[in-house]
Picture (cartoon, rainbow, N blue to C red):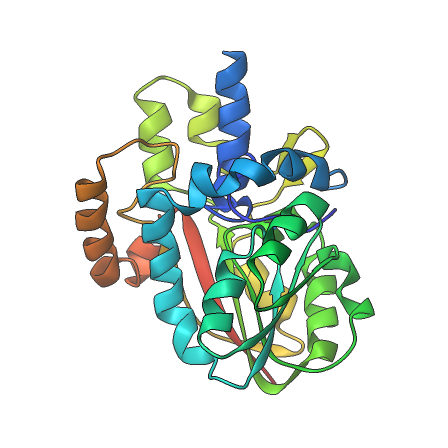
Amino acid sequence: MRGISKQPLPDGRGSDGVSQCIDQSRDRVDQSRDRQGAVGAPPFDHLAARYDALWTTTAIGRAQRNLVWRDMDPLFQPGMRILDIGCGTGEDAAHFAARGVTVYATDAAPAMVQVAQARGGFTAAVCRAEELAQIGGTFDGAISNFGALNCVEDLSAVAGSLAHLVRPGGRVAICLLGRFCAWETLYYGVRWEWSKAFRRTNPVAYQGITVYYPAAAEIRAAFAPNFELQRWTGIGFCVPPSYVKLPAAMVRVLAACDRHLARLPLLRALADHRLFLLVRK
């Protein structure tokens, strides 16, 4: 399976990645007919020109990304070199480049990479998550935001490639769609759309892409041989998935609540996304 772009494909790259992209794209496509797989690039290529408008610059997209940056920013200092897996249109890469971090950004969708390259300030190249080993070199860390890795069946293989690329002591931050999202279950449950309300309990196939929803224990196990999971937090417990339409003022209030609540052990598992912070052994 390919590691694909973040947040908007089937609504989600999640939120970026697949996160809201995967879920958002799927739901948007579903709605048109009625919203980081083996054929992952084409759907994201189709979304590249309007991906930022659909997700990145929306109130919900910005709120969820700011919550991610709150935990990612302290990990990477000016002068460091990091890898961005499933970079999408390059929003995260541009953010870290502006902070003095050297970024090598990758995505499986050529059109997404083209948009990212147009930003300037960092390197962007077409590369699937399963092909990271071919990059070579050494990095001080790596990121993958909003569900790009939800489209990878074998996370342990990706972790193995990262073990060869990230130096000992380097930090890895990955944000994936969670297995259960309280907002999603409520949103679709009140509409009696039960298949969507509980769709994350099993892999979801969509136009050649299979989206996986690994549990926290599975992620820990996939990275365990070479990485230590230091902690994980919820992203989007109060802030909903992007297909839930709310006024920007309300989103700001919910984001403020998330800053205090989404890290709590019982609540983080109910969030739209989960951010895992690991260190290379």
